Length: 120
Image (cartoon, rainbow, N blue to C red; front, top):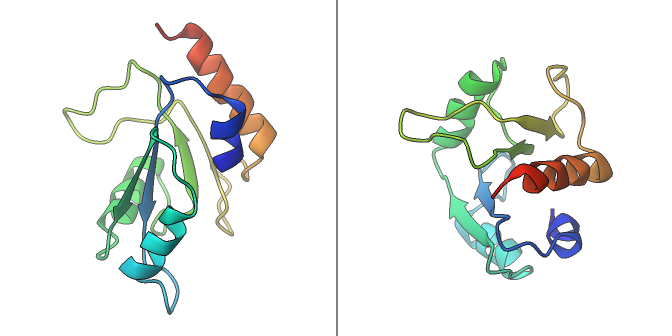
C-alpha cells in the first residue's frame, strides 16, 4: 500500500492500518517499528492486541476465519455510524479465501483511482 500512496498523492485518500498479532513474535513494539518505516500524513496505524477487528471483518466479509491481510476500499458514501459497512472493493493475501481476489497492487490502485474520480 505504500506504493499506492506514493503513486496517488491525493489528500482525499486515507489509509488505516490495523496490526493484529497473528504470528509468534507479533507485538505492539514490532507493529510500531513497522509503522515507523513509512510515514505519510494520510496513514493512521492501530494495534489490536485482541484481534477484535479481525473478528468483525470476518463477519462483514462472510469469512470462516478472522480477517487479516485484507485490503478494503471504502468510498466517501460509506456510513460508519451503524457498524462496519460493506467495502466497495476488497482484496486479500489469505490462503483458502475465494470471496475476493488475491491482492494485486495494480488492480487495487486502479479501483482507488476510480473511486477518487467520482468523489468530491
